[in-house]
Picture 1 (cartoon, rainbow, N blue to C red):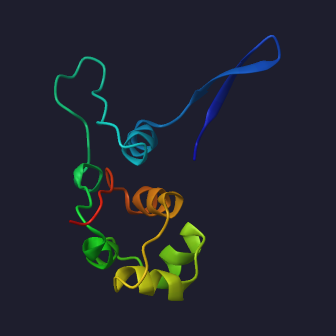
Picture 2 (spheres, rainbow, N blue to C red; picture 1 turned 30 degrees about the vertical axis):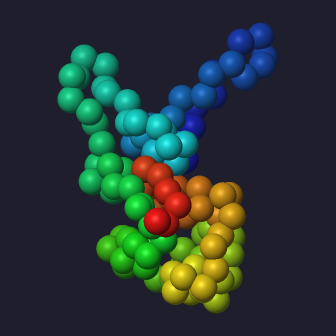
Length: 114
């Protein structure tokens, strides 16, 4: 992340991040994308506007992003075997893993399967 820290009196006061990364942070937090100053249209990419309606879509989203399962699993901090079980519906990950998966897939949020 290309973060710029602005300090006052030797103490960090603000962090400035690139717009795309800011949008990804909002998406990972489950918030609506921000609009650019002076722009009435919402600025978002197709992946940021996507949301996962159930874990059944996890494998297809990963494949659409061109991520091998091993790479996504290691990036999220889980084993490839555990990711395979999540994708197969054999395991339900906790909220922290779900947030991390959403962040790395660039999607807006997760919901419980119905």
